[in-house]
Image 1 (tube, rainbow, N blue to C red):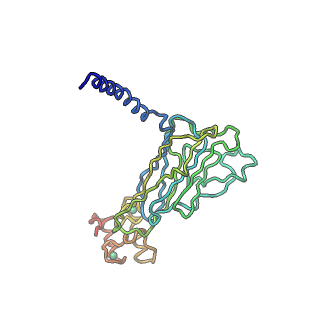
Image 2: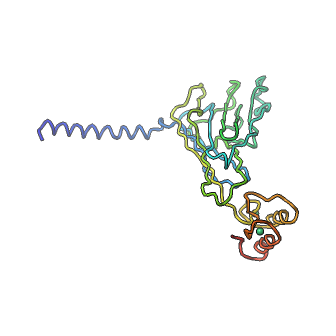
Image 3: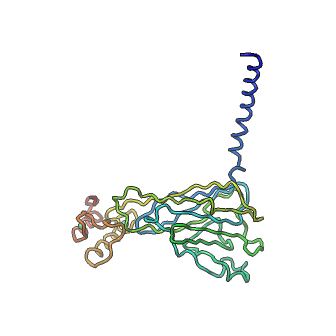
Length: 276
Ligand SMILES: [Ca+2]
Ligand SMILES: [Ca+2]
């Protein structure tokens, strides 16, 4: 190797040594990810509603408005609540103006969020239950109240409610619904109205749990309430709870006194847990 070749190799090594940390620092810089939306992974039960939290980490800039679009991958297993959108007068009576009648807000019991509590506008809209569009504006009438989400805040931005289908048999193996954040429909703005760039989006999921024979109210315990429900189905014509078969404790295809006896034995007399 000639002297010029050696000099070139040494120079290249030095350049690489300096350039590598610069690239790594750029990746690690907080400015690369101003905020993160993280949709939770959670468990759902057939025939019930499940709240899904959307977490937010806000590193460097205040958030005064947002729109988030989320799509479900398995509408056959779960859909978003289609009744969340409504029109009310105002969430912040001291700040209300003549704009009130034009402000659409969510029903607080169905979409909630600690970080946007008392914002002027919080809204969820879904079409067909497969896609939900969440909108929030802190100060819609420009009176500087309430405050935007400040930097370094971590918490639940919103919770969306989804309905898990009833007819999900335990024989179904693929039981996970993805909640995918759509970049094209997701935007965050600062108090000046400028778009906040470098938003990191983490998809979430809801996995439908397998049923537990005899736990008819899905509360992970067995007690008199389950027995009452079982008796209702066996003798009083009550509808079977979700999912199909959760009340058929001997797996013979129907619910009768034998199922009731099995559950009473397990709950009150120390008998074996009904499994079949
Ligand atoms: Ca129970
Ligand atoms: Ca049975």
